[in-house]
Length: 235
Image 1 (cartoon, rainbow, N blue to C red):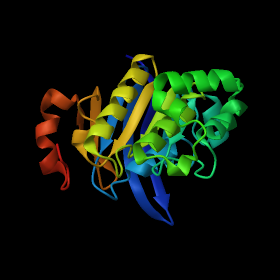
Image 2: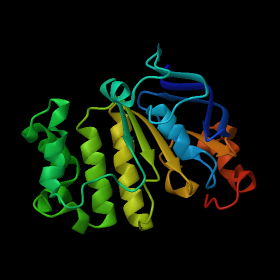
Image 3: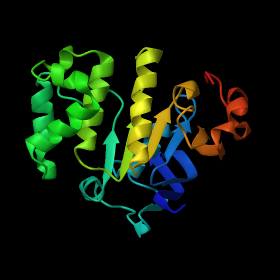
Image 4: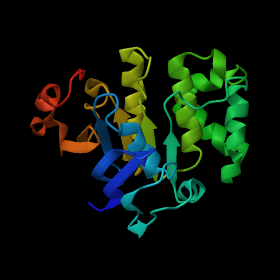
């Protein structure tokens, strides 16, 4: 299975403090890869590097086999990389419909974007005129996902999708993520709490202090090792 997104030997730093120490990670089309680890492990930085938001000190970023190291975030976005950051990334004072309207810059019509969003998340149709900031946390995550899907991504990067949400809502959101992957999207999910994502992940990597300590199929012994690899897992 060939990788759509590939990080090779990636090192990255903040103010001369290195936070990623040679990270190797691959995500193929149709695959969900879970990036797990404790707070401060470098998980969000990995996503920021993959989306071009944070520079590499060394290493390579490839997209569809093409070297995109040092590419501008806008170029990576145009090439199909979509980052949904922690905190959901919606405009709270705008209605659901206006949040979706802003995605017409992708070249899709308002009608097409709304059809994609409302078909996948019917609750958003019922909330179409409601201000995004008044939605529940789960509904805001649905809106963030809907906005991301409007870009027709090849790679979807998700940061802490479960943050602040009830387990039942998290389970439903990850069912949607699995469905998105089945449509051929490469999905890289950052999670601190393993139990939230492992049931739908095809592959998992555990990042500890900026290094990948273990990776493989979730049922290949990795699930049982998580507590030993880092404190705070809920596998």
